[in-house]
Length: 430
Ligand SMILES: C[S@@+](CC[C@H](N)C(=O)[O-])C[C@H]1O[C@@H](n2cnc3c(N)ncnc32)[C@H](O)[C@@H]1O
Image 1 (cartoon, protein in one colour):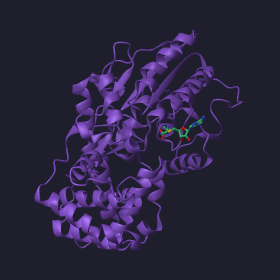
Image 2 (image 1 turned 90 degrees about the vertical axis):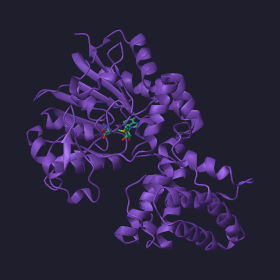
Image 3 (image 1 turned 90 degrees about the horizontal axis):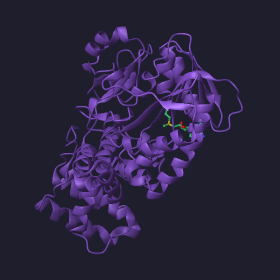
Image 4 (image 1 turned 180 degrees about the vertical axis):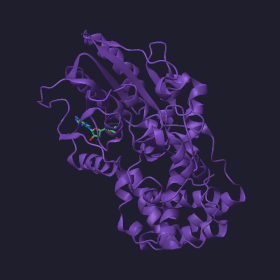
């Protein structure tokens, strides 16, 4: 259950903006980000905008069970837009505490706004009223992920772990921050009503405009999931060492390496995303060289003491903040991304100095992008060996450490949840 206040005062424009955002989020991988810049959303006042976003997030976090409930009531699927209205109606009635009459009434009105869909007003009314009479269960873990992904997780981690992973999809996450200066941890935790997790991440359940939070303006922290903060720490860079961050944008790991005192080179192939790295560096007063290039073919000849490859991936581990990734991902994505990752790993190994460290990570739960990728890399690269990660090292959850010393971080390994990640550390022979 989301903690947003009941808001039957939010009117049709807020629901219409939610409809646009949900349609965008389910339309493509980048849809949610693009949808968030939609003018209909920007035109709302702050409270209605928060309602529209919370409604879409609650819908996406429970999409599987919502669809199962709707399928039990609708024999022939109506047009897509009507399906989206029904999904939002169910989420309002059962997840956002919107009074049922308002959830049903505004859903019928949304459909009525579209001349071509007038004939579905009766269906929307009947289906939602039917569900209000017999409230559906919306938290069954086996329905929370798309069935193809759930089947993959069951095959990779077993039925119990698959259920635990999926159960986290329905939970709203806290906000995790990485601190520029660990000595400020206790003071910032007090100011932000947060706690310091093992490894140094500050976790807060505050909501609202981050830019107004203590420490933001002076660049004392940046938002970074607790799992996402582990890979850069594992490089243990020392002041003055050279560090290369090969897929750097928007820059959370670059900031960590720079804050630890390394001379950082941050490479990303996307110039617009690299701009965000530069902005984050400017806000935090940290410095790094930024380079817009394809990391696989970057012609630079330097080698580095420490190399981090946070490779592009299916991002299935990030569903707590991006539940849309689960529904936008396709089974064929994984194989395509695994091919890119192996090229980038070879490039990362070439850039690592003799005797240097290399960390590979992906925010994916799929073994082809993690365990399989690393096994193949070790098989074809004589110059690198695994440098095993110890339980508890730099915040690595004990449950995540595999027998070979790589990390398979599942979202439920830390109380309160984290992103899912796979992390491996290598040393290059001297
Ligand atoms: C998982 S994100 C990186 C997140 C980042 N490390 C952080 O902590 O903020 C992956 C990044 O890889 C970049 N990317 C994808 N393919 C690339 C390539 N061939 N060369 C360089 N960057 C690439 C994308 O633009 C994207 O910014």
